[in-house]
Length: 438
Ligand code: UTP
View 1 (cartoon, helix red, strand yellow):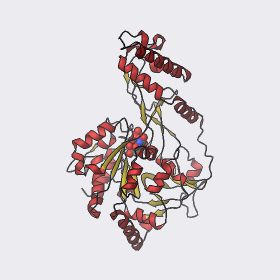
View 2 (view 1 turned 60 degrees about the vertical axis):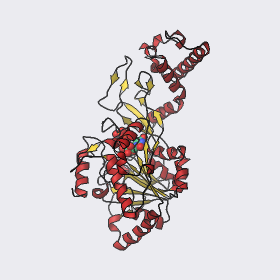
View 3 (view 1 turned 90 degrees about the horizontal axis):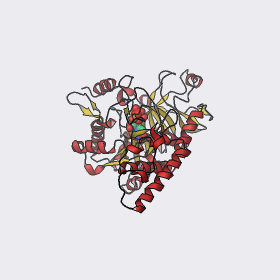
View 4 (view 1 turned 90 degrees about the vertical axis):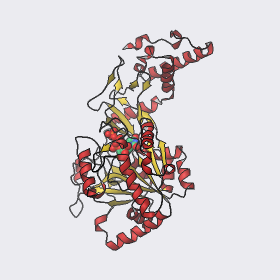
């Protein structure tokens, strides 16, 4: 480890502009060093001597802005946790689209149609994730799917879905896209390069979510560059705070938006605007709704809806034990079988409410490239870091009730997660082509 040699900036060979600047740098260095010592993170300065003046400044400034207490508490708590469920779990009632009568579908859809026609609907696409499982360099939304007759990016596929709604109702839906520090510039450039897929530019609103440092399995922060501590987006549940911070809740309100759909970028069959779901939610006087797919097997690695202490919630696969997974109702069906497919609907009032709440952090185990003590980039071939994320579904526990509508996965669920699992580009392409009869 090279940090034995760390010298204050005063000792740096390159000239600094004035004595006061020199003092300022010296103080900053000492403050940063003390912080790192307190939190046992001194390795972050291991390449400090080799940095340029501006790089040193950048690293010190970053150290001074990081909340080490928060990140290391998250790390310690996640290590200590045995994931035991402390709340009382019970099922959350749901509807199934294929059990609704034609008349119900017609009536609910008409109710939804009339709201959408009023220009009161906005779409939020959460595209700030790292896409680490896919291992594709670039924002996941720029990943090209080999479709016939033309390859299309996930962003283009999402855009086409929203355009279809625009054509149907003769409106232009405002499309909000959440990015992160890691992919914001590349995402915006991609849209520029593709002429925004002919979507009205003033109706596409990019906004950036927050970051948190990531840690290795020993709880050490890591370097992305010799002068940069690795930080990454803090989960799709940060969407509410990010909308608030960027004054977009205010904007939606002044634009007359009343309903917002939230979806991920990686489901190529996602239906962003669904008049049936909207109509049902309005008719039942609810302010949040989610679509679900049927969980076929108790051991399937998927998050399912439930109630925790009476409130709508999710049982993630980390906290659902076999006993709960296998519990059956009086019809012999698994009690917890409505799986999350990251397709949600919320009223603007509901979004406003949760934007001021604090959501819990979950730990995700992910692959992240880092710079080692010698300054060499290391590309891991398996997960090596913990990332802490807010999940959007934790917002639902702030409400007494929500609507769940089970849909057909062949019509609405074709995500791309990695190259080797069940949700890979080939399975997504197959489902997409089958659905669109390409
Ligand atoms: P996932 O967790 O499934 O995918 O996010 P990911 O983060 O992109 O990829 P991995 O886990 O590293 O392989 C589901 C959706 O939530 C968005 C993603 O962009 C994706 O659309 N998301 C995720 C965010 O917007 N921000 C985040 O911090 C995390």
